Length: 454
Image 1 (cartoon, one colour):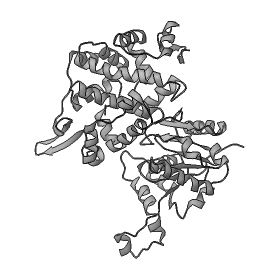
Image 2: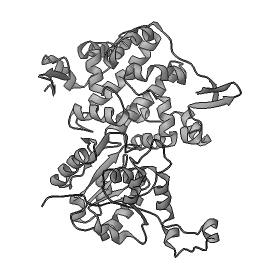
Image 3: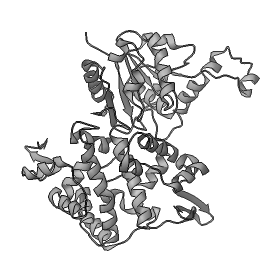
Image 4: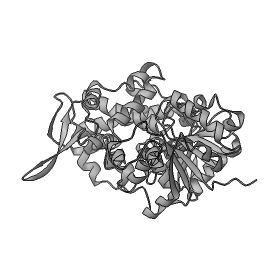
């Protein structure tokens, strides 16, 4: 039997749930979007003569999520006409409609107990053979499905979209030990061919691939900023296009993502790992203070940066982590920065900076790149089966021009490993073996194809 997704359901109508529903609608798939039924009638609804028996009230939460798609920027819909493909409902009255869909995607709050309770209800109403997935950013897929029926377990997996779903290419697909291989392969092909995603198969580990490495890299950058007494603006001036990252660099990215979201993702790893890794994922105190103050970024109007308006115009101020006050934004200007700026392409720029020993910018970039390269190498086999998946996840999910192993090739594997060892670092055994076997790069071009050296 040829499997098809003719109709889907999304459980949860927040920014992410509505965004996934919009992405499905954009490719022509009708979507049932359900959320909780409200407990009370609002004053506005009372004035309209509505009661808790009216569908307009009971579907309020999902309807709000649907309507919000019209106002979001960047636009989640390719055309507002696609809204007619999204049907809003609630998870009290409309669960029986799940029997009519081929794929059910859960996008509720990141809490294992709540997710398991939702899946118990899903199991009652879904039709046999329908695919069920979770959009969790890091909760164990295996743990979520442990109480489900055998048929649901076979058709259950993680499908982690990145926000905003329409624009970020990555889709991490995470099978469990019970996921049917045909279901896994179908979802990978469907993600690529129908949803237009770059699909990476990840293992069921904390935060999967992209968020695991991306969060680690961001926290290492914050740590080095504090240790080297640099400012927020100075760090952003050299951690964007200068090293093959988006213009939003480090702290502007955190402002866009939302510090509250970032802390949740970081804590998810912190609570599940041990030793030095656990220490790295401990969110610095000043960031915890920011979160408590509500300085969580763009959605709050201030975070690491604050736009200040005056009669003369407006300017962007940066947060000083020591004083917790805003000040004029700075940039890191050194000879290495100037030299790297003259180079063409992210590979040459990165290599130029990293090789600038003794230069403030060069030393800083090396201090944040080195740990990410080693961490990525240490996790190979644990979070993904190959380096290509890790590189693609970082390029497609975080907008990097180069994944960790592509970065390593750009700066030179042999020389950088020698430098790491001189600095007292332990390099994973498989990297040493690769070099001993005469392979001095992770990728090799041959007849226009990029091949992984074994």
